[in-house]
Image 1 (cartoon, rainbow, N blue to C red):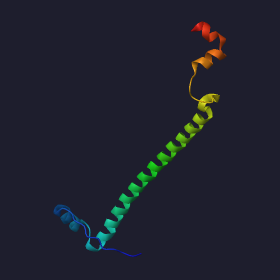
Image 2 (image 1 turned 90 degrees about the vertical axis):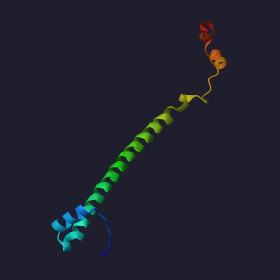
Image 3 (image 1 turned 135 degrees about the vertical axis):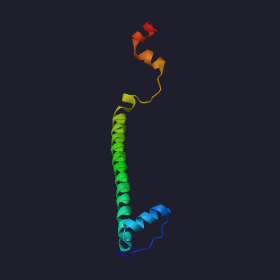
Image 4 (image 1 turned 120 degrees about the vertical axis):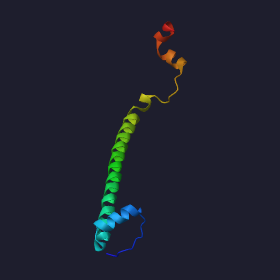
Length: 96
């Protein structure tokens, strides 16, 4: 695997503690493990968000299919024409 050198900046107190705690030849491994761990957390969060989005999308598709099944409920258009309604329902005139 090809390796790359990375220059980082950190506060002096962290640097002093790092030098005291992590041997010089192990620092790259420690940084790599820490970064890999953080990347894994972020990738898992993205994966979980994608699963939630996929679930929401599936629910949306289901609702759209239900709406499509009941669209206009057999009506040819969405406009309510009261005169047509009264012509088709003889009781409508006596109620109105």
